[in-house]
Length: 452
Image 1 (cartoon, rainbow, N blue to C red):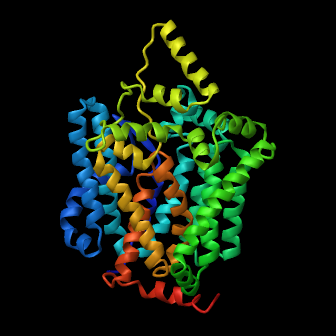
Image 2 (image 1 turned 90 degrees about the vertical axis):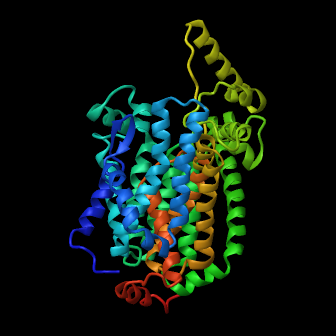
Image 3 (image 1 turned 120 degrees about the vertical axis):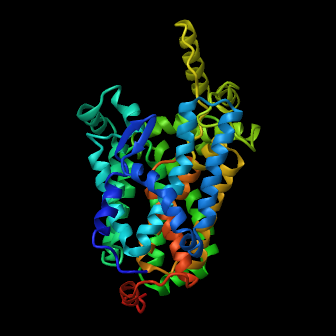
């Protein structure tokens, strides 16, 4: 690897700064994505051997194959052209961003922190301009620009938690070895508590943050502790599963006893009517995932096409079979109201999951793509977690949240998510001797090797 370019830091910061600021071209697109999409095919051809050497090609070919499947599925299912283009753009963005980030970060492996810092400020910038389309539609009720930002900021606590988290990722993850570990742990713990007590929708965010906190506490900063974690990997997996069960039970007791507030208690009671256990909580709070899964099983190979219309009544059948009396009443009252005013609303099949959405939209290749990403995450913690200690803080905190999102949240962060995958692949390449860890990073890591 050569010496970092003079302006590389600035370029990486700008990529982060304009990663979450969006404009509308058919669909919403991040400003930073536009030059990336244009340059990626050329860089891919020029850097092909380098990408192959560094082990990036499998994930890149899977992303490109998903693009092909997006076209095939759209044709088979007669998807509207606008939805087909948006559906193609999602896997193409993964291909494009990974190719460009590979080129940039290979010149400076420590440069990822500038992307994270830029992405954190991007979340502040788009409060009032270049808002994310999902938040505008959810909160602004038709307002745009400054007025939309004002309404969103005033009405959504979880909106602010999503603005705080990127700064924690940037400073704790980007400057992990420079930041005192007790301060890092304290910041993450405070965020987890804030998420748990301030929102009725932030419990999952708090839970995965606590898991990330545990990883940080176990791994610390020394390769000695990270090596211990690696050798005891399966034990900690079992411990995490037990932790999820304990957190689930703790959430149940806290909600029912009103410790999380009256809204949380009402929401929990509404979700858990005639439901029990962890699966019951998921069905109550993430029913869209199970609806999408049902649709996937009906067309497992080629999918339903991007943003498919629910013309097979998947939502209705799920509510009839698994919904609580309150959910039945709400759904059918809404249906009767729409019929009374002569309005037929075309419902989209919900997914609310990286894995389920890709399977639903693109067929079996979309499912394989995210299974491969999860495989890379497991391999990182099992084999390579101690290779680049400077990255452990960011990956430990972000991967736990990311793993949850793969199963239970829609895909977003089209620059930050490929960045995380890039760091994992670079770690593997360094472990296999395909890339050399810069001398400065080796010296920095050695300072903590003697510590417990």
